[in-house]
Amino acid sequence: MATTGKQLFTTLDADGTLTVAIETVSLPDPTGNQVLVKMEAAPINPSDLAILVGAADMENASYSPGKFVAKMPETANAGSKARHGLKLPAGNEGAGTVVAAGDSDTAKALVGQRVSCVPGNAYSQYCLADAAMCLPLGDHSAEEGASAFVNPMTALGFVENAKMDGQDAILHTVGASNLGQMLTRICKEDGIGLVNIVRKDSQVDLLKELGATHVVNSSDSDFMPQLCAAIDDTGAFYGFDPVGGGQTVDTAFKAMEQVAVSRMTEYSRYGSTQPKRMFIYGRLDTGPTTLSPSYGFGWTLSGWLLFPFLQSAGQDTVSRMRKRVRDNLTTTFASHYKTRVNLEEMLTKEAVTDYRAMKTGEKYLVTPWS
Ligand SMILES: NC(=O)c1ccc[n+]([C@@H]2O[C@H](COP(=O)([O-])OP(=O)(O)OC[C@H]3O[C@@H](n4cnc5c(N)ncnc54)[C@H](OP(=O)(O)O)[C@@H]3O)[C@@H](O)[C@H]2O)c1
Image: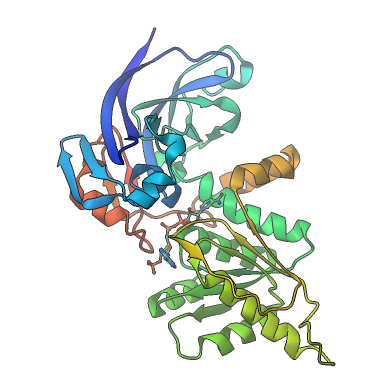
């Protein structure tokens, strides 16, 4: 028997019109390894924002109950051709209670349990999710489990990746984000050196309270010497950057090279031979990435995305990571929310303007039945 509920869809037309609206949809019964989850909570993460609002002009958008229509700037629209005309669901992850299951044993075992899941359409009252990707939450609330996948597995993935690459220290360019706070706790637990870059004094205090040793404020006049000292102390020639645009990565490479050169016993016109590696894993700044290679030739810049990493890491590693998240959901991997909104409230001008700012500690949680 089909199940009916509200779901959010986002559509970008070829002329740059972005329509985000709530519709009532009918879901078929789950089959095979699928479960039907009655959703209780889903976070609005930066990766969700990319498809919800992107670069659209939200100031001059038209807002009506359960819907907004906005204009995408021409450059952003031209770069989004692949999604023109597609009505897409949104919401990578969330948590809820399994109310029906397909006929696989894995799926049937979850009926009646509260789980975190990664359905890709979490801004819904009901979702079909893959049972293999569901994490039973036991006595945890939906709010505690809503962000149990994307940021925890990414922060853990950075540390796993570093260990696989023989590194014992990491540089992170947005230390105070939700993910950055998790990374700070993980590195402390695992004895991995961590250099955190932040941009406000309040963020320095926040990370110090979590036990971070090296927190460098990019707004300080002596930022570069501070950054070099922290890299020298930890040996962090390996880093992760969610900013993407601008000079953040360039600055990290320059600081790494300054440290490497200071350790050389002989001058070389080619710079140091120290390998330096940065991964861009987000687009908090959607502008062009500026590099001014003046840091020798041993530098590598690449992208980093959670799902390909998990695929390459293998099932044993992924199972170990998921167990660690489940066992430490309210400590190492805790997320905090500024506001709870239902599906209609998340599409008001006030809410959109606030959550698209992506400020530290100001994440929204969507509670579709409230
Ligand atoms: N590649 C992947 O697989 C993957 C997986 C998970 C997350 N991510 C990425 O991880 C990043 C962090 O996610 P989150 O959920 O932890 O974020 P969040 O808690 O919502 O926080 C966003 C943070 O970014 C800072 N920020 C925003 N714009 C910035 C800019 N232009 N330059 C420097 N800092 C800026 C904010 O600081 P202020 O308060 O100072 O503005 C805030 O600390 C996002 O970019 C997300 O897309 C990627």
